[in-house]
Length: 469
Image (tube, rainbow, N blue to C red; front, side):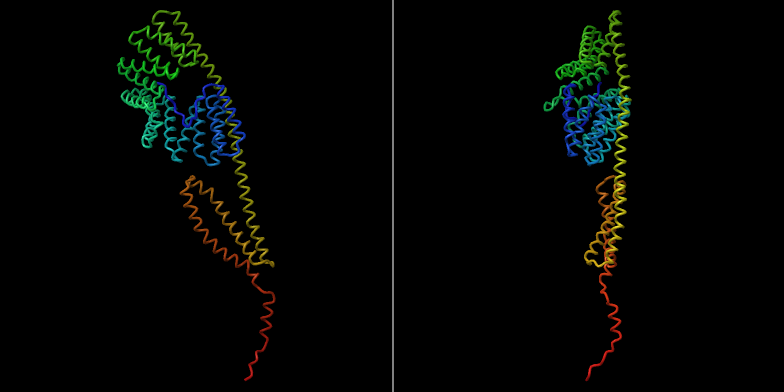
């Protein structure tokens, strides 16, 4: 049973290359002209999604740019979207390890931002990645955790995906009762009159058909396959239609209804050839080759066997091309990462230089204040310069503490507030005491009157006469 893969925060499905090119060109122009960072990061994410199917390499680079900018301006929702689109692009080029890494990072960020829908979507996608790798036991906990979050937070738009993927996984694990339970749940949602979805109904019917066939209940299995084909035909989902049709063809063959079986297999072959669906074309070729071989029609069997070999050769060739493109793409990513690291290093150097210059300026400013305090300058001016010196010193201390506080609190606002309040509680009284002491020292020279000492000395030599009686 094919997974219905969920990619969160998607805007639309781009139907053809020309539409994709027009959209990417339009968004690229908007990105260049946009001056506001918050708008620019949203446009970059839109562009990353547009590239994720047509040009995954560009999709990853664009999503990385969006992610970096979103981090810089503190927009966690856009960071999450960027990680989603990076994961989509990696998945589309077959790099499941990188796709998994992006979804795990997205899950962690969504948990930190307390966004249940994004958490659940990430968990489903992680489960799908493991399912694609046939690591079903590792996929199951992620599906179940996503299901519990969806139920707890009543995330309606993800319920179907959760049930359908759980049904699919239990189907693969041959736990038929559980598979049947979740497929039924998914079907009930898909067939709801208020939100009826033909494609979802078709997928659920195929799942239910699989379960009944495993129980040897061919009558109900056949009924669900037939209902699936009618729904998927109306939905124009040829890929899933081919899967359901081949399942039904195999069931017909089991019941020795050879004419019905071969008719369905031919239909799948034609649809897959017309729509360029290589995996479905290969499956149909294998079915037809085996069918004609068992019927003793070796010419026809050989014809379809050659078709199968040709498809396999094309697939292998495409894999080699993809491998070459992937190596080139990895180099592009590496260069982009190097450029980003250089940019970050330049920013850090600039910040360190600024801190160093501020650290040099503060004592120079204080020494200048001290020098001026010994000159004939108004007391208020000296007081003002002294206060400014202290303010600069204490604010510089706070500035030095700031990165350390952010690192130990992991950007948690409540913890940051508590720590900075504690620092302020220590610094403010100290500031007041030092301010009074410093102002007194700086202005002591300003309070002395020139010649005051000589006047007192002269007065000491004057004899005081008693008044006459």
